[in-house]
Length: 182
Image 1 (cartoon, rainbow, N blue to C red):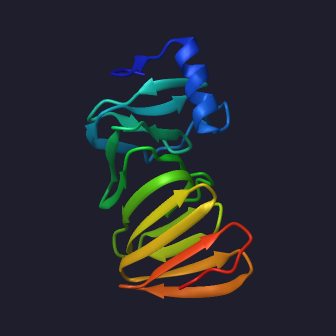
Image 2 (cartoon, rainbow, N blue to C red):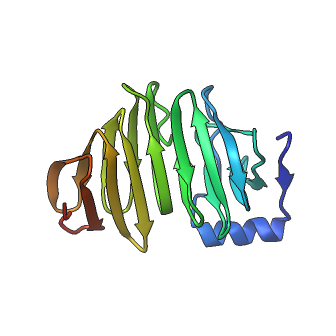
Image 3 (cartoon, helix red, strand yellow):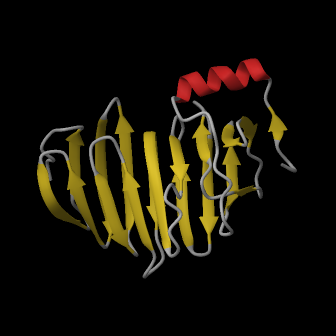
């Protein structure tokens, strides 16, 4: 991809082991994300190779993205925004349904701001968060996940809990297979 720096096979293999994400990337449909702010090392898995992301570069739907220890990236698509903190690993638009952003979050912290009417789903090891036009923060560490709702309402399901609604100002914490705590 233009503007990307290829990593050596040894470093790419090491990154794949560290992240624990699938060893392939799915070519995404139109509707790519743009890296509007990049600090430190940010990588995307494209056609089986880890490539460094540069500011202004497109990240296609269906690609894995990873920030390293000092890495941080802001991704924009239309008026939707995702900010990935250091040590965060995700698969963007995992199911690629039109009008929806679906994120598989494996580790780290995401800040998400969805435009009014835009639907965003975040799948973590502990729960799935689903919002339309909300602002939220999702943290994943060692199988535990937390959610802070900044704006709007988020429907959460997973673990041993029934569906719940988490509203602006509320938080939720949980672990895989456990009851969620609001």
